[in-house]
Image 1: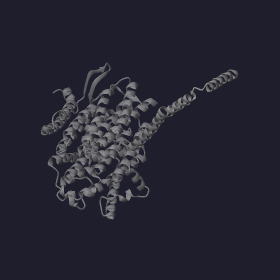
Image 2 (image 1 turned 90 degrees about the vertical axis):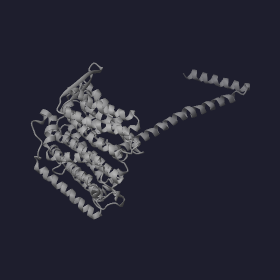
Image 3 (image 1 turned 180 degrees about the vertical axis):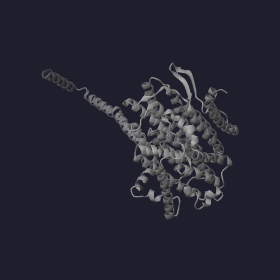
Image 4 (image 1 turned 90 degrees about the horizontal axis):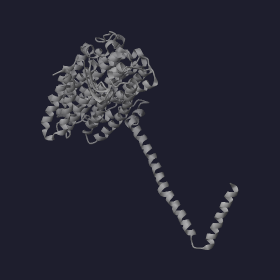
Length: 612
């Protein structure tokens, strides 16, 4: 097999396997499950085969100058490998989790098509081709959510509208980029940010990238999907693919398509978005009482670290942002898999109905423990090292950004202490007395991800030296960011902050007598209680604002329509009827009446002639 063939097969194999799921009857369930896993395995094999390759494949496409162009280089090869690795593990998990689900075959189809279109985004070297795969993912996300519970269609529609609106910005940005650069070949574009139009183009494309990544304010469909969509969807898309796709393209914007410099206004804008996303999303995670919804807000919060790091436009920040991207894809996927394990075995993810599962599901608990401390930034796990790189870059750009990042870590650790205590420790719920450990095929993916979280921390030279730093090339300026963090002051602060989070949980749990309510002193703190009340009523949801605006516009439009209808079908008809009735009443056959009207008309004409 040639390298070019392998490159095309990364798209073709999951594409046709996904179509098979829709075209063939449900009676072939076992065949479909086998093909589903084999397709994931084939994708992983092809990704390993292509790693470290440098390829360019082009064919004439729509018209001269617009080619079907695919490019494989260190960054795209890394992204395809990460997607294939997580895709295969989640596929193996899904076969057990989705057993007995009505629309499992459709879910497998959407799942594989998502992998195919994601690979298309990573490989596309033409703006129009990139747009095709990018927009295709919007439809697939809609499909994956809609096969969930009976209320899932509403959530799928919400996701489609939110992401669709931002994708319109992305389309306009693509068109402006092609206009400004006079080419659609991505590898040939490098625009200086030296005019309002170029800056606007960057912002439009940035909106598409951070929306795909799940950043605020384009996030509100994700917590809803956590409840309504099949759980493997959350592990694959919001936890992994969204971050890989969105942050991949954001990195390409900063490194390749545009010349973003530190201290520029656009750099600061990215950092502000990152800091706000970190804080607001993690504050919402604190008060959740559902396992999956809590994780969904952390999926939003963690992308803030990636945007913050890349937004600094500093090599250490970009490396930290990319490293955090792959770390988050790992531990966030693993955390959602533990949630699926709990849901499958205990029948619920409501934390008020859970407790004591650590003794009954020790492997799941162990995997949760590793991935939870990893996302919290505890040494020596992978999240610690990527966060420290982001901290270092953030403090170089301003203390306010560093404080936001560290405060986010405090709340992250606090919310996972609450989650772990409520679900796996404490008193066992009587309804879960018969709960047992999950199926081995569900446990293996979780265990593998947990092991990688340890390896990427203890041996962080592996991902940094071989996967991430090569993406920067000469822009790394010869720096090596692997090993233990250089800024020991920041490390000490991190340890203190995490220690405070632990103390906060212990005191809160002791005061309330419950791990689940250990953070109630924050939820009901003066000034925060009313804000939280409004947030839980979705007052701050931009989607609801949009619906409200649409409702106002529709009411105004309806009023205008009724007004026009009243004028055309009501007032005009009545006036015409009244006038005709009056005229008809005057035609009574009386000669004297006719003579009087004639004289009156003559006087009017005479008066008009005299005056004018």
